[in-house]
Amino acid sequence: MRAIEVNDLWWRYPSYEGLETDYVLKGISFSVDRGEFFAVVGPSGAGKTTLCYALTGIIPTIFKIPQELLPSHMKGQVSVMGEDPSRRCRARVGLLLQDPENQFLRMDLLHEVSFGMQMMGLPQDEIEKRAKEALEIVGLGSLWHIADKVHPSELSGGQKQRVAIASFLAMTPDVLILDEPTSDLDPAGKLSVIQAIDEVHKEHDLTLVLVEHNPDVVLKFADRVLVLDEGRQVMIGSTADVYSRVDELSKHGIYLPEVSRMAWATGITYGGRVPFTVEEMERALSSAKLYPELPSTQETEDNESAVEVNALNFWYEDGTHALRGIDLKLQRQAFVALIGQNGSGKTTLARVVAGIYKKYEGTVRVMGHDLNDKRVRGVIHGLVGYVFQNPDNQIFTRSVHDEVAYGLRNMGLEEEEVEERIRQSLSEVGLLEKLDEDPMFLGKGEKRRLGLASVMAMRPPIIIVDEPTTGQDFRMSQDIMRLLALLNSRGTTVIAITHDMTLVAEYAKQVVAMAGGRVIYTGSTRDFFSNPANVSRAGVMAPGSVQLSYAMRRQEPGFPVLMNVAEWEAAIGREQMLTGESELNKA
Image (tube, one colour):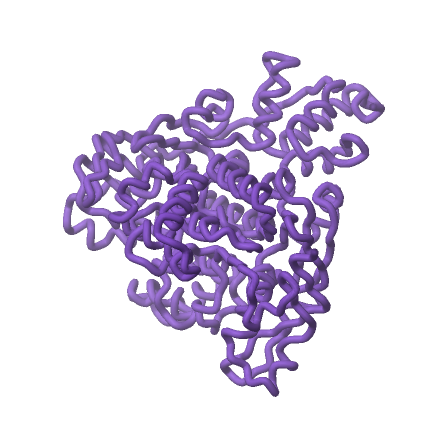
């Protein structure tokens, strides 16, 4: 039996200004078998979330379009478990949204996970049994004994996502649709949660539809993949077949495994296709004698500190000791990656430095100013710009233009200067065409970019960005990081909190790693990745290029760490240049 059938689906949203909008979905057709793990990938704005809404009946139901006007907004058919999801449907279909906070309805963790089961009319003992099992599946079993006392808002971003996933798993739906369900989790947490969902999917014959940017997750778990771009279906097929088409995927801005990108750039194949994993790339390179040349590093000339922290301790109101005696000094003009697992203290430290959290013990100096001085607190916004992980926490106007203008006008700038900065910052983050849009109608990725544009426009000497690339497609992630690198080259100190180690290795000059509320490493990015023990202690996953370097050390113990595709491409190209026709390419 087919779990999902979509035939020539077209959809466009109603306009609230009387203007006719373009179609967001344009002739989509595919089917999903019962029990299949089906992935949907595509760049930001491709129509992925809109497709999820159509599969659950949110489209067109929630928009209450008059029946006579519906054909001008929606064409084609959608069937889930043999029924139209926009009508009364007996099939149990769950949709996990990208932002879990949009789905929380209850005042404590226990009742949040139990709510759906209560609506299903399950007996109390069955509800408790399923709720406990679901929390254990997503790695939150340790909270069970206090589940009736913890409000969802008290949890970290990653924990909130796990709770939302648990709420749906507990209901054992026929079809579960996951819209980037692990975007706020660290890489290890992302894989463990998806692994747990996959086990439930196999055990209960659950049909899964996963919207996901991460190629490692898709390649490891999905049976088939649908690729969308600008509302159109551009590719569909088995996971291996789709991800073998590197050139096409690159044109559509799809994330690819790092080893696949370096193999494509150098003409390396494995079994007639590009390698997907480090192990495959290692085997493909087994006959090569590489001659890596590491790029020279330029130390910053400015030895003055942008941020200086001494004996910093911070407690939350519930008594949680979030920061434990931190000592840290960051030079001006540094590009720093602040890394660590969820709950390690990264965001707490950043918010203390930004002056958001004021009740702490110890000393914090920003650009030479002591934050304990009340006079400094009044001007801290001019020293540190902070881009929140959840963009809804800092967006509050009714137009993109006014959102960027707000801070500029508070700075007392002339209106001509305000308008110039608005257009420049929005252009740099790819949102200029959304100038008059209400932020409420932006996607989560677009809201993140709007938050960044608002801070950039004020041109503070320090910018802190919390997970700047979460939910962004490959092209936009690269654009954002290049933009931060450009700001850094102009003299801005950049502190990026991120789980994406590929971007850390490619762009950051310095790493500050945290675990358990303590700083466990501070130093150059290359030194951090050169020692696998650093990576292990920080609880992060080294990017593919670094993992491949570790693998090559088994053949040649002194092999250096190459941190990105460009460095590997140079090393492989040098091997071919020095040996003529490479043994690697002969193989």
